Length: 219
Image (cartoon, rainbow, N blue to C red; front, top):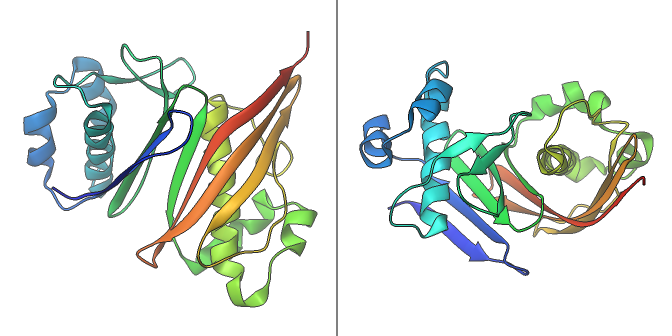
């Protein structure tokens, strides 16, 4: 069973990763998808179907339940585990699927490192973030910023956020060994701070995960 890891972090937070080596049949035979889940899967094509299935199978493994609960979506498209008080986040990229769960908003993102991220950097990097980049580690550093903003977007769980204007990552120096960083979301009357961590997996991937630490909303 290619469970890469299942970690218990602080404050009831869990993080898991699955290496995708199975066929669709492996997952479908074990998961018994609900009608709603089948409708979610139907329009997905190619290898992304395997990624989708692997993420939801990993969620079940991490839940510790003998009978799998459905993974559904709320009105904004954010996934949730049926009959669970925990918030969840799912991400997948080619051969890896990841899941994060906690009693507070969380977000996880896994990205395969590719040089073409340079083409979109101007869309999500603000000036302060861009100035923290160093030439030797520029590409993986950009992936951490991108993954961090994706993770915060997922933790927020709604739409309309501009990655450059509303999701801010405090500038940091990239460390090949991984590290802890901080970020925030500021959108209309919503303001929240997040603790994030990042790490390299199998040299090819960057994993970033976030947990909400403080929220302030207008009265």
